[in-house]
Picture (cartoon, rainbow, N blue to C red):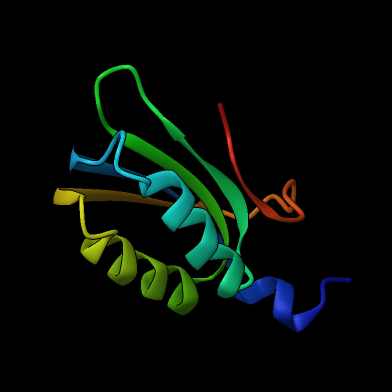
Length: 98
């Protein structure tokens, strides 16, 4: 039997475009996600984008999206793409992936 809170959990793959590498963006994202009690991780992609895999309540993930749109002061986010998926529960915390 699933717990009602589990039904509210979703997974999102978020791709962030712009000047988002080498500006403390991953550390900023990890700090905000941890403060929001989200689980998953963030990594740089070879093409200059930053990728997040995150699980939690959709409204909380949307709050994270709002914060990463602003980003740290040295970042310039030009676009965010989000794919919503079913939560898997594979993450227990949020971390920076290398």
